[in-house]
Every structure is written in C-alpha cells, then in structure tokens.
Length: 312
Image (cartoon, rainbow, N blue to C red; front, side, top):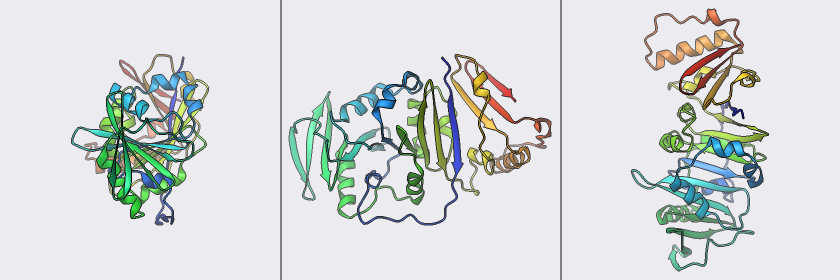
C-alpha cells in the first residue's frame, strides 16, 4: 500500500483586521494559550481510512483524553483544543453546540463560577469539567482552562488574541473531515502525533491551517500560512511559486516513511528565495547557482532508513 501525504501551502497576505461578530462563534471559544485546534467535521470519512489511522499515532495519554472527553452524541462541527497548563502538561478540551449533545456522564459534583454551573465528572480515572455557555458547551480536563473560557464568554471576548488565526479560520474547507490549526509552539506535541513525518513540525513560525482530504488510499493536508519577510521561515522557499500537480508520488516505492515534494514552477524564483533564506539563517554559502537543475520541473525527497532525492 502506498502512503502518499501531500502538503500544499497557499501564502496569505491579508492586511485587514478580521471583524468580531456580535455573537461568539465556535472558533471564538478556543481558550487562550491553546497551541493545537482540531475541527472535526465528519467522523464517517475518518473511520473509513485505514491509512490515516496508521499515519498518525497518538500516544496513549492523548488517545485516552480524546476518547473519554467525547460524549456519546456530539453535534458537528466540534473543536478539540490542546492547551498547555504547566511546563510539561497539556489539557484537552472539547467545544461543540448544545443541540443533540448529551453529558459526559451523570455529574458527580457541581460547582459555580461567575454564576455559571460547572459539572464535574470522572471517566476512566480522569476528571472532566463541563459548562454551558450560550449555545455552546465546553468540556475540559482543566478547571482553570474552563474558567478562563467562561470569563471570555461573559466579556464577549475571543480566547486567541491573534488576527491571523481568525483569518486562517475563514480559509478552512469545512466540507473536509478535519481542519487543523497549529501554533509553532506545538512542535513537541506534533512530534508525538506525527512521529514518522520529520518535516511536518518545521513548517512555519506562525499559525498554520491545514485541511485533511481523504481520497481512496491516500490523503493530503492542504492549507494556508502567513509569512513574515523579516523572519527566516522555511515556507519562504516556495514564496511566489505557483502550485502545480506533483507526479513523483506515483513512482514512490512502498515502505517509505515520509515524502516531501516540491514543484519547481520558476527555478530563478526558487534560487532567489533560497538566497534570501540562507542570508537570514546565516548559512555560509559562497555561491548559490541553481542553473544545473534548470530543466527540473519537480523534485522529491524520501525518508526511510536513508534519504533519497528524485528529480523529474
């Protein structure tokens, strides 16, 4: 079985400030300091992909959290959030609409915070805190994260104070099974979720939005990111290069762990991008000349026990 993971990034250069609606939307409830947001749109497609289940491997702790925090009936779309609550600890939260959503379990205890009831339940040895906020409900492993979100709700404030995050949210494809929002500070967690994709956590220094598309035996992550010209960023290597279909994946042998493909639409532009990137990252190169690969339309890099380069 061939595993093909495609990464296609569109660079957004948007200067306008996103509008804050009078009524908070699902994405507005994401807690502050959250580093990973996963919007679940379709559970059927996810269960149908055997390859997808092999491509990502949640460690046991995260797997238990994601399974136990989810109610029997859930209204889609729903948001899973991973929020740091200490130096080496992260809390998983779930945000969804109230309709058709049951409780995690019969509440074992209730407390009140700012006149909002918080239900406390236990499942598989874990404690969960749940509260209703307007038309939404939030369940979290952390009482502190939930209380912060309650204050945001009562003040009609967003949890994430970053305009780029909400601009990226407007670009996501809600017709696909999953949408990811990744903060660069989530690199350690990403390595635990995607251990066989070594380049994946190194994609950007800003929020990154990715949409998961499943097509038969393959799936792809297509998304958007912002670039800051004043900071070195590996994504700047593809700046101003038009996206094109990749053909090398059709010739990739079975058994590889990761694949990175790059379409070379303009070799001079790629050379200029690399020169700019090398200057900003202080790479000591005396001469940068891509003329020897001017006839190359595409190149791919394979990762297994050894690395290999393929040119077309």
